[in-house]
Image 1: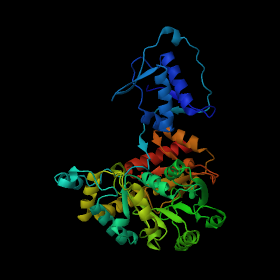
Image 2: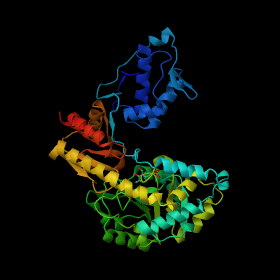
Image 3: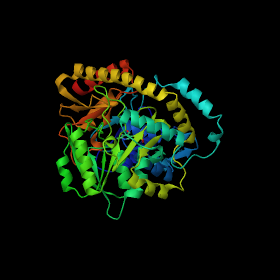
Image 4: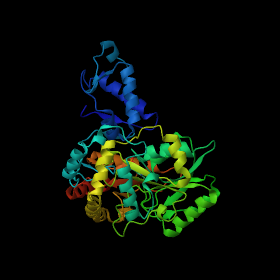
Length: 460
Ligand SMILES: Cc1ncc(COP(=O)(O)O)c(C=O)c1O
C-alpha cells in the first residue's frame, strides 16, 4: 500500500474513482491478498476527501467481495479468482497525482498544544471526581449545576455576559447545540443568514433542518451589513469576536447595528464565540451578548481553549427561548459526559481554568509570532497573511497564480499538510487561493521546518 499512487480528477465522483483504483491495484497485484488497507480516516486525510467518500468506496469494495472488514482490525484484501484478475483495466485520466507520503509537518487547525496540557492537575481532579457518589448516576438534562455556575462566573468576568446558571445549557458540541436550536427555531419557512465565508459545521447543522440559507458576505475588512435589509430571514449565525475563517472582529458599531436589526425583526442572533480567549494584540473584545442579550443566543465551547476531545460546549439562551427549549428537551438525557462536566467544574473552581487560559494565550501568541515571521521571511511579497491578531490559525493568500488544489498537493509531496478554505465559501469566492495553517500543536522547530518546506513546494 505504501507506494500506491491515487490519481483523482473531477470527471466522476471521487468515491467511484477510489473504488475503481483500488480494484485495479488489487487486480494488478500492487496490493496483495491479506494486505491491510488504510483506515477510512487515514485514507480520507491523505487524499484530502471526506470520510464519507472513502467509506462509500470501501463499502462498494466490501459489497463486491474485493475486501473484507475484520472487527477491531480494519480492512483487508481478499483472495481473487484468476478469471477476475484478468478483467480489463482502464487507467484513469492523468490530471493530478496524490501520493500517500508521510506527513512531516501537519498545520492542522483542529488541535491544541499537548505539551502545556495540565495533565497532572486534570488527572488529580478526575480521580477525586470518581470518588464522588454523584459520579455514579446519569447527569442533569441541561448540564450539571456546578459547571453552569462556573461558566456563568467566567462569562461575566471575561466576556461581560450577565447570565443566570439556569439559562445555560451544556452539551457536547457546537453542532449539537445548533441542531437542538434549529429544532426550536425552525418553522415552515425558516430561513437563516450565515456568513460567507463561514463555519461549514454550522452550515451543515442548518442544512440538516432544511433552513433556507441566505448569506452575509464577509471580507478581510469585515462583513457587508448593508445586504441585511434585503434579506428575509429573522435569524443570523455570526462569529463576531474572530470571524471564522477570515479572523476579523466586528466593530462596536456593527454589533450595535446587528442587535438593532434583531430587535426590529423580532429575530435572533446566534453568536458563536468559539475561540475568543486567544486574542494577542488587545484584550478579548466583549461578547455581543454583553451589549444586549435579549435576542442573542451565545455559544461557547472548551474545544479550542482546553481540549477538542472533551466534547464540552454550552449555550446561553435568552429568556424568550429558555422555556421553549426546556419544554422540548426536558425528557432527553444530557449529550455531554457527566464526568467531564464535574471535573471541569472543579478545575474552574480551583482557578486552574483561568491559569490555563492565561498560560495558553502566551504559548499561542509566541507560536503565532513565529509562524507569521517565518512566513514573511520566506515568502516576502508572494503571500498575504490574514488573521494574525487572534485564534489558532492564520490564512495565507497565495499570490503565485496556483489553485488551492495544486498548493495542497505540492505541499503534501514535500511532507507538509495544509488545509483548504474553499469549503467555507458559498458564493463570495476569492480571486486567489487561500490556505489555512493551524499551529497550536506544532513546536517552533516544526513551524520553521514546515514553512521552509512549503516555500520549496510552492516557489521552487
Ligand atoms: C466557528 C467554529 N465554532 C465552533 C467550533 C467548535 O466546534 P466543536 O464544539 O464541535 O468543537 C469550531 C471548530 O473548529 C469553529 O470553527
